[in-house]
Image 1 (cartoon, rainbow, N blue to C red):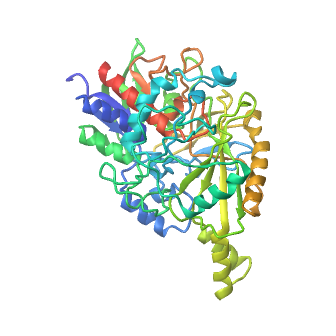
Image 2: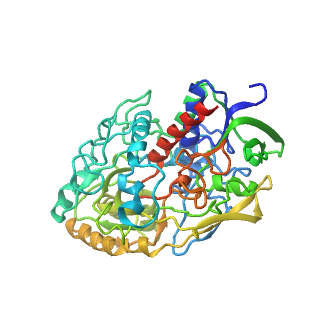
Image 3: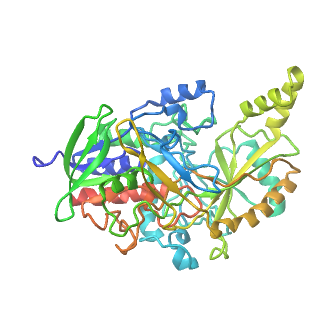
Length: 530
């Protein structure tokens, strides 16, 4: 140990990086976690959100840090992403981007992980579902995921699919009234509105209280019923890992044998610190991990670093039902429609599912009624109650394929406060994902008819989720991938990349749970190799 500053250095303190650090630290290894952003307590995020005039920029309550810009920092991301309306929102803060996630905790399907084998399109993961399943279960129990064991989450009619080795740790949350009514009325059209598995504690779990429906899952649960990476970071620290915040890693050194020998980071004032370790882990999200590799020309003998960008494109639809449903009571997302998740035509049409959004839009409706319709007094109050009570919002989450031409590159024409470059993002929606829209339009029409609805607006333009995958892609062959099944880089035996950026196929559900399973698996392997 005297020859090294730590056994393991982890760059990034989000849910995945903190899990690796926790696994190594509890095994008795010395661990340093480096986080580019600051440490911001939950109470401050909640108070910032309460006083912000703009309520739907989930990054805003965490502040804009000049030395650690995020996806909303002006100029940091140069987008070439037609026809996308926006792009994923990412944070650089202690606890990572999971600080503002919705807490949706879906398992991948076995078919998601063997897309090429199952349907002849895209790429396969370098391991299969049954290899990852025990670690998925561990991640569910760590987070306190709630769900319904007997539901078929593939959209089919099997009993409890995908397969589980243990039941959900917690029962499902109480159904909001809106979800109950939608289940009843959409059933006539053949749709099942299922419970959306989440890491909000439906009952007290590991010191967290049960969810009481504050409807603030984004950006921050005010009572900590929702899991976030900050909780695993605290576990890692309690196990002995040391956290250094405001530490922007920009340089990584390698020896003649390809092993990483050291890295260094800058403070907000530009002071440099160099550290050595036996094992190195880069656990930034799918933008920052490849950025750091590109800055240092590492792990890129395949020329795949930064390529294969996937972001779960989707569209949305809003309408007014013919009865009060009162969206906004309960959890942010509690229901989903999964019939399109794993259909037989997946060789031609991407997987897709629908989220039933359950968020309160009072400020937007009030602004429209006051400024456009000039309503005041009783007329204003009556119109506002009517719109809020009958409003329904549904959005799709669509699979996209790993395409090398969808990528991020360094933008050296833009510099942050300590002189590091920004990013260029190039993304084009392919025909495989676009093919879902015919089904979506049919489904939207059926939803509208079943609920006696009146459209509030046409289906939205394509938009991206806060999910970044593929940019340091996993595979068996070093010629067309960056990491192997163990998340070890092909080029550097003591450098691992623990990020959803390793996903070679996106499926159509949130990637966090599968990413955490990979992190547990990689953390134990790294601890054993030290």
